[in-house]
Length: 135
Image (cartoon, rainbow, N blue to C red; front, side):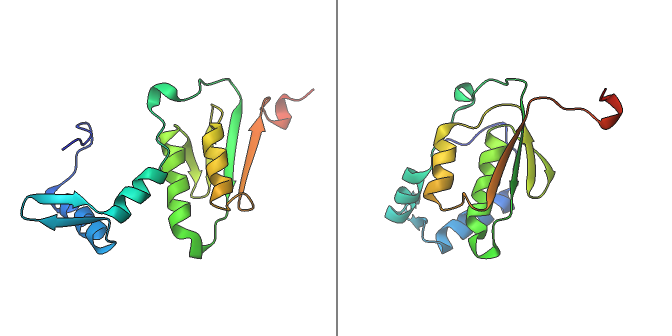
């Protein structure tokens, strides 16, 4: 079926996901099985997949991604969290993530395409420490 074999999920979870996708008209079921709809194809075409090998290397610079995306943009907020996970960022709080590699230009362009730039702040920290260590 083309699913990642390292991901374990229950039969109930699998059916719940298919049911939700069907409800959103992204997949449909016929005699032969499940098929992606035209709407589903359009949505998949918009996704910019970055294979693990294509991720930028860690460069020693800490990056914080802080966002406050409104509730009416919930799907975009979920999308951003999934992108951050895919780019190996870790959650500090629900809307504060930390990573050690630059974010690809495609992701930054997607933020702009989705009109999210005013809700998302990216901070780079080259030198970290505490006041205790400052001289």
